Amino acid sequence: MTVINETIQKWNNRRIAIIGGGPGGLILALILQKYGISAVIYERELLDANRQRGGSLDIHEDSGQLALKEAGLFGQFEAIARYEGEDFRLFDKHGRIFMDETADEAQKGDRPEIDRGELCELLLDALEPDRIRYGYKLLEAVPVADGKHELHFENGEREIADLVVGADGAFSRVRPLLTDAAPEYSGLSMVELSVDTAAHPDQAAFNKRGKVFALHDEKAILAQLNGNGSIKVYASFKAEREWLDAGDIPFDQPVEAKRKLLALFGDWDESLRNYIAYADELLLPRRIYMLPIGLRWNRKSGVTLIGDAAHLMSPFAGEGVNLAMRDALELALAIVRNDGIDAAIAAYEPKMYAYSSESAEQSDDNLKLMFGDDAAARLKAEFDKYHAMVEQAEQ
Image (cartoon, rainbow, N blue to C red):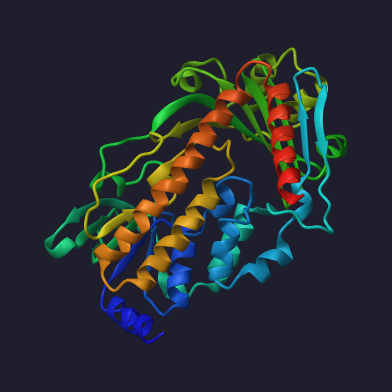
């Protein structure tokens, strides 16, 4: 314990800058705060915008939950997490059902759901207010002497940091310090929609309490009940990168855009098309990007990456936020256990490469499966194989 205390004292003479105030950046600052190590989050938005970024998240036992436990917040998380959110229904476009799983709340599964906004509110409430600064959009980080970096922000401010942690997502401004790798379009586009279940109780009954996947013809309708009672929907399809811009769906004209989107899913079952027909008037087009699987870089003093900045992948392993939180946990503990910046980075990065590469491969495999031939039947077979392995391991 004395050694750790001495290490903490050394770190408090250094400035740690975390770029990005999403779940990964927040968890990193919180765990460091727990150990008495100062760090400042620089967030580009003028206020917390996490409620507008994505819907419900499933937090995994072996990653996100471990980070919450280390931060001392797992009890509070359990009190608001939705274990019933693990319900899962799988269809093809004809409405044929392949899976209809209902979570047993009494047993508490290992991947409970929570809305992104609620998770970040939990983290922010535990974070000392002076550890996050809003309205700090990073323009560039410039290497200076002794492994330090000068941070240039759009608001005109400049800061010097001993350690810069890029937690700033897919198009990170910190990543270029380490690698020339840039996100590549995965070939998949989505339109994000939202259905008000109070206005459409029939769709609420169809969706039940968790996720619905409908897969066919290199397309998907993916739906998830959120904590506020709305259903977040992603109408997904393979398309050229320019299609969302050059296509004939006018996203600024909601009625016409929904008509065009319904035509794209014209031969799908009505129960599935209703996710589009019943949707609110805000339609958000999205492209899915990914970094090269297994991306690594030559270690450099004073800078590292966590989350999507380090290993952006498609969402089809359900690992995005969980990996960001695990990265934050591993990096925080590396800082606590090492009295040098280079030593902390050297302890963290190889471990992060190993587990994130495995998840990236799984995510890519799942994308190919879900948007390939006989997708619903093949995904059902994969679930059956997994459940059989679990049962065998428990015997």
